[in-house]
Image 1: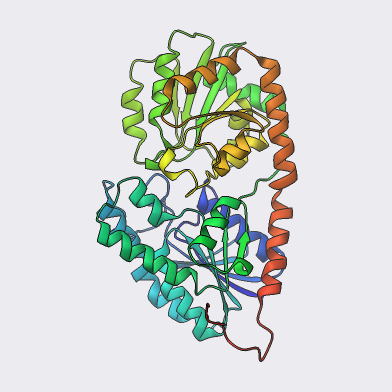
Image 2 (image 1 turned 90 degrees about the vertical axis):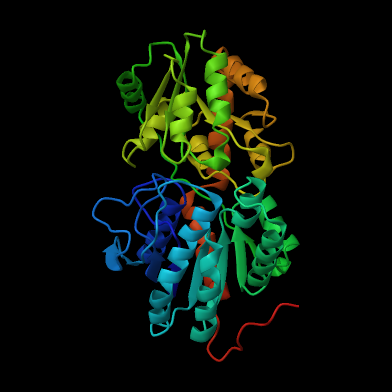
Length: 416
């Protein structure tokens, strides 16, 4: 099967959406499918073009059996709502000639990853012209999130954006998302239930040797018997990073609790400033794939702050690695959200915005090794049952085969 994937982020060596897209493409290629990916040069989450790439260069490369077509993108030096729109628009515009060339390849399925939604009109049109099926996968509902976070504010713009989103969603052969709540939201937005699919983020389940975790703790300078509370992931507007700084300040007198904040993004500088003068806090850059499992296993508690206004518009991809590490999670999530439903089984959920409750949950777990072990084991069991990469992608492959249009079959049936 010929599968064309359109994804702004495609970076096998990093975490987040870019890594998921890369693993998905490589897995399908290893199964014998022809896979092409249209993507920007690696830049996320540091918001800097990766070494060996140029922002304004078209480039084609073979990466682990996947034919990757890089299209230019503008990277703003500072983040704002308008600049982010221009950033996404630059990639959507630069992909047009690349997508046009794919018509000659005649893919069977065009698989689009949102964000960015801006690429969906051209990619969907390509699918129709090439006789392919169109599949939109929603990692984040970026339109809702942009207005919820205040990145965009104008009511007329909101109505226009939501109307366009609904129009595009209703014209897909499949729409998938990463949690049941997000799939349900797609149906609310007009997707026929028969075309809505759950495609969760996955993880590679393996045991990190205790010696590797201990070596990482020694490298970080964590004293014997101390509790390490770790945040590792993107540092952006959706993450609620203010909870991390508040908890570290409230627990500054607990010499037995050490905080490590690992990652990059537009909010890192503000978080570092908020933690200035706290000796129990240290910052790390993004870790390589080789080091990342050891870092997760070195933690005693994982921290997952989240803003209330994006509760069911996003599902943090970092959660999968946390669960697979067998360590408990403390999160800020609204009652009834998909995130709260998962973490309630393997950690502690506190209301978003309640810094005192967030700090107290960390302190309570820090003093109860038995509870940490029980919650971590429950999270690992949940990951094994729901997030195993081969199981998730195997179901995805079956859905692709079921979606493929038989020879001579009619074109896409318009939504009712």
